[in-house]
Length: 283
Image (cartoon, rainbow, N blue to C red; front, side):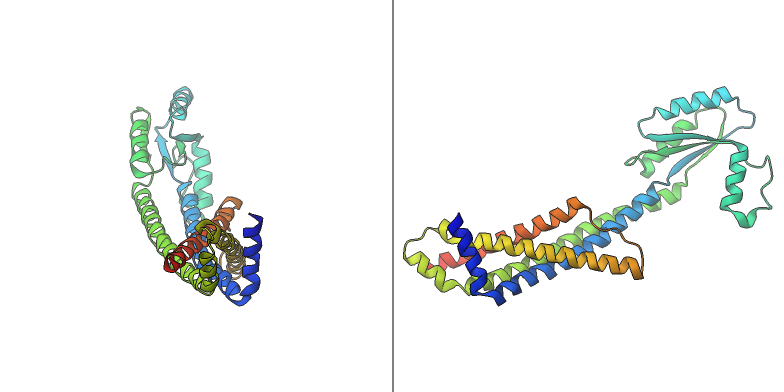
């Protein structure tokens, strides 16, 4: 293993320009994929923040006994899909309406708005069918005058999320495929530049594993370096966008490590395929 590692490092010294080209190509290929992933991540987070505002509002009949309201809230609160249940008095509803719709402040008078039970749903239970089912269950209480949850708005939001998810998967796979093709071609050039060395090693009886090992280590190192460079470029792009255009969220530690791992895997696979072809040619 130490011999293979030393040979891999010598490979960098023998062809520094080609090695730098390989690392740079890996970096920019992964950088393009990283930019797309960054956009997809921020779109997903934005939709998730909007989804968190989905709630069911059950308006109460005037003079509903507090005991009935408390009992209903207790029943609704134990639903698996429900995250929080809150009682809004008529006074609180009036204050909220005046705050949210300040231009219509004169329209709202005391006693105009009824009290309500506001229901927030857990993450994963905000699709149109689930929201409607919960709303229908709440309607059975005789003191519930009306139940609203912005049905059309919830359906549109869910459709946008589905379209964004599908588009993200398709485009992400396309970007990844292009990156793999470009990186594979670059690594193949580096291996072909050392074809004479591979031929000599093969002729003197070196095993396929012995020949491959230094190239795999070299591909791993190039992949990690390219992944790290791509991550740095993506971070700079994210910072510039946040500073001059719109606030963005960067990858977490887990996603960043996955990016480095992806670069390493691409480097190893590209080297393995390229070396394998060269060995078959010698045979």
